[in-house]
Amino acid sequence: MQCWSERPVRPPKGASPERRANTRFPLAIEIRYALMGCRERRKTGSGQTIDLSSSGLSFTADRPLLFGQKLEVAIEWPVLLDGGVRLQLVMSGVVVRTSGTTTALKIQRHEFKTRGDSLTIRVAALRNDL
Image (cartoon, rainbow, N blue to C red; front, side, top):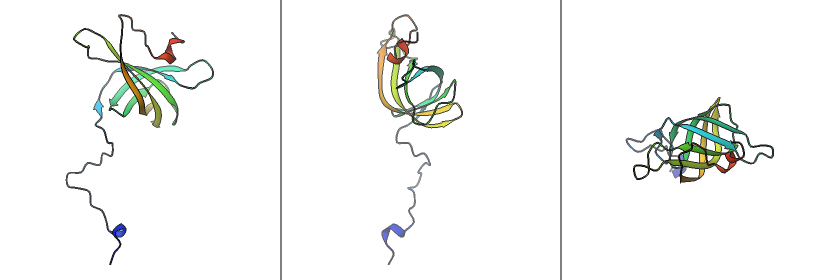
Protein backbone atom coordinates (compact mmCIF):
# COMPACT_ATOMS: atom_id res chain seq x y z
CA MET A 1 0.00 0.00 0.00
CA GLN A 2 1.26 3.48 -0.89
CA CYS A 3 1.94 6.05 1.76
CA TRP A 4 -0.24 9.16 1.41
CA SER A 5 2.82 11.32 0.70
CA GLU A 6 3.70 9.25 -2.36
CA ARG A 7 0.43 9.77 -4.22
CA PRO A 8 0.33 12.50 -6.84
CA VAL A 9 -1.76 15.50 -5.91
CA ARG A 10 -4.20 16.91 -8.44
CA PRO A 11 -5.12 20.57 -8.29
CA PRO A 12 -8.86 21.26 -7.97
CA LYS A 13 -10.75 21.81 -11.21
CA GLY A 14 -10.51 25.39 -12.36
CA ALA A 15 -7.43 26.02 -10.19
CA SER A 16 -5.31 28.90 -11.33
CA PRO A 17 -1.50 28.77 -11.49
CA GLU A 18 -1.60 32.04 -9.50
CA ARG A 19 -0.15 31.40 -6.04
CA ARG A 20 -0.84 34.81 -4.52
CA ALA A 21 -3.35 34.81 -1.70
CA ASN A 22 -4.62 38.32 -2.46
CA THR A 23 -5.98 39.67 -5.73
CA ARG A 24 -3.69 42.13 -7.49
CA PHE A 25 -5.27 45.09 -9.23
CA PRO A 26 -3.56 46.70 -12.24
CA LEU A 27 -2.76 50.30 -11.38
CA ALA A 28 -0.49 52.80 -13.17
CA ILE A 29 0.20 55.66 -10.75
CA GLU A 30 3.36 57.60 -9.99
CA ILE A 31 5.07 56.75 -6.69
CA ARG A 32 7.87 58.13 -4.52
CA TYR A 33 9.99 55.88 -2.33
CA ALA A 34 12.75 56.14 0.27
CA LEU A 35 15.19 53.48 1.41
CA MET A 36 14.84 52.88 5.13
CA GLY A 37 17.75 52.29 7.46
CA CYS A 38 20.43 54.17 5.51
CA ARG A 39 22.89 55.80 7.91
CA GLU A 40 23.83 58.46 5.37
CA ARG A 41 21.29 60.84 3.87
CA ARG A 42 18.15 58.96 2.85
CA LYS A 43 18.14 57.74 -0.71
CA THR A 44 14.91 58.52 -2.51
CA GLY A 45 13.50 57.74 -5.90
CA SER A 46 10.39 57.56 -7.99
CA GLY A 47 8.61 55.10 -10.21
CA GLN A 48 5.25 53.85 -11.40
CA THR A 49 2.99 51.14 -10.03
CA ILE A 50 2.24 48.04 -12.08
CA ASP A 51 -0.22 46.37 -9.72
CA LEU A 52 -1.28 46.48 -6.08
CA SER A 53 -2.89 44.15 -3.53
CA SER A 54 -3.43 44.38 0.21
CA SER A 55 -0.13 42.58 0.79
CA GLY A 56 2.08 43.51 -2.16
CA LEU A 57 3.07 46.18 -4.66
CA SER A 58 4.74 45.71 -8.02
CA PHE A 59 6.34 48.78 -9.59
CA THR A 60 9.05 50.05 -11.88
CA ALA A 61 11.69 52.15 -10.14
CA ASP A 62 14.00 54.80 -11.53
CA ARG A 63 16.96 52.55 -10.62
CA PRO A 64 17.47 48.89 -9.75
CA LEU A 65 16.65 48.06 -6.13
CA LEU A 66 18.06 45.14 -4.16
CA PHE A 67 16.38 42.10 -2.65
CA GLY A 68 15.83 42.64 1.08
CA GLN A 69 15.92 46.45 0.99
CA LYS A 70 13.33 48.13 3.21
CA LEU A 71 11.33 50.92 1.58
CA GLU A 72 8.72 53.50 2.42
CA VAL A 73 6.46 54.25 -0.53
CA ALA A 74 3.90 57.01 -1.13
CA ILE A 75 1.18 56.91 -3.78
CA GLU A 76 -1.03 59.88 -4.62
CA TRP A 77 -4.39 58.08 -4.45
CA PRO A 78 -6.57 58.72 -7.53
CA VAL A 79 -9.92 58.72 -5.70
CA LEU A 80 -11.05 61.64 -3.53
CA LEU A 81 -12.44 61.00 -0.05
CA ASP A 82 -16.02 62.29 0.23
CA GLY A 83 -15.64 63.71 -3.28
CA GLY A 84 -13.15 66.40 -2.32
CA VAL A 85 -10.34 65.31 0.04
CA ARG A 86 -7.09 64.22 -1.59
CA LEU A 87 -5.49 61.09 -0.17
CA GLN A 88 -2.07 59.52 -0.13
CA LEU A 89 -1.41 55.82 0.46
CA VAL A 90 1.76 55.43 2.50
CA MET A 91 3.25 51.98 3.00
CA SER A 92 6.43 50.32 4.13
CA GLY A 93 7.76 46.92 3.22
CA VAL A 94 10.63 44.82 2.00
CA VAL A 95 11.77 44.09 -1.56
CA VAL A 96 11.08 40.40 -2.26
CA ARG A 97 11.79 40.27 -6.00
CA THR A 98 13.59 42.38 -8.58
CA SER A 99 14.34 42.17 -12.28
CA GLY A 100 16.13 45.21 -13.62
CA THR A 101 14.04 48.13 -12.46
CA THR A 102 10.88 46.05 -11.89
CA THR A 103 10.42 45.53 -8.16
CA ALA A 104 8.01 43.55 -5.96
CA LEU A 105 7.45 44.83 -2.44
CA LYS A 106 5.86 42.82 0.38
CA ILE A 107 3.77 45.37 2.27
CA GLN A 108 4.27 45.24 6.03
CA ARG A 109 2.38 48.41 6.99
CA HIS A 110 0.06 50.78 5.15
CA GLU A 111 -2.19 53.75 5.88
CA PHE A 112 -4.13 56.41 4.04
CA LYS A 113 -3.31 60.02 4.89
CA THR A 114 -5.12 63.15 3.85
CA ARG A 115 -3.19 65.71 1.80
CA GLY A 116 -3.38 69.47 1.63
CA ASP A 117 -3.22 71.34 -1.64
CA SER A 118 0.56 70.93 -1.95
CA LEU A 119 2.01 67.87 -3.63
CA THR A 120 4.49 67.33 -0.80
CA ILE A 121 5.03 63.66 -0.10
CA ARG A 122 4.36 63.03 3.57
CA VAL A 123 6.51 59.94 3.97
CA ALA A 124 8.64 60.67 7.04
CA ALA A 125 11.76 59.44 5.29
CA LEU A 126 11.28 61.92 2.46
CA ARG A 127 10.75 65.01 4.63
CA ASN A 128 14.47 65.57 5.05
CA ASP A 129 15.09 65.47 1.30
CA LEU A 130 12.47 68.01 0.19
